[in-house]
Image (tube, rainbow, N blue to C red):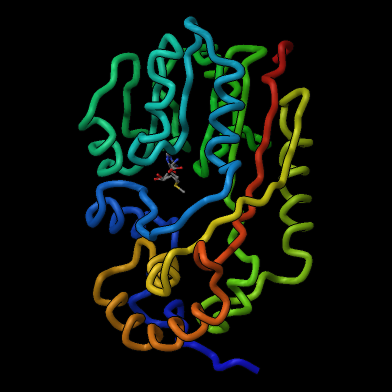
Length: 271
Ligand SMILES: C[S@@+](CC[C@H](N)C(=O)[O-])C[C@H]1O[C@@H](n2cnc3c(N)ncnc32)[C@H](O)[C@@H]1O
């Protein structure tokens, strides 16, 4: 049995990822939702799969909404490819970063997607989210209100990283629960089957990433945490992580697998 490493999630300073406090910390420290670790990704990358799918449906008259756009880097890709692209996010600091380099035809607004979205009925031709809120849950009307009948809905969700990472660094990373990926698939399938979307499709796919150095293992684990906790984690773990990393790394870095779900649907014409 390998040595159990320090578990930063048990430290009182640990901030639960994806909470309001965690996003506020990230926005104040980094100004955006940017992965700070160094790595190399094999093609096809998850965000390229999503971007290609969006581009398939774009035209010069299309209006596009990015829900939970973060600092807007991805949103801006669609500038000049559509009539209007809007990014919304609940975190003011992310929206402030997004607005720093304005691009024609793209705008950003601080909006909580769980409240009314400030656009008229049937406004958008495409509504997507890249790892943000999904507006097409059972019982939520807002997504259906702002999208045109026949409009395109897309969602990319990150479902965790493994491919060895979780067994190489016990304690620092916990194993996926049994049947984790099957359960995830079932959860998203149910979500789509209960929605009012038509022609639904769901795809789970693997993205291969090579973490560049032992420190990147820790940077990934401590994404969005405070500097004071990072210092403790480095002191507690770096030596062991270096040893484990060099035992398993390939010439490109430590190979890990990111699991993603891509959801697709068309807003009902009869809604
Ligand atoms: C995992 S991050 C993804 C950010 C960006 N789409 C990206 O891929 O880099 C999730 C984003 O959803 C935003 N978010 C979470 N809840 C939200 C809500 N209720 N309304 C609007 N945005 C929200 C967060 O602030 C965060 O920027």
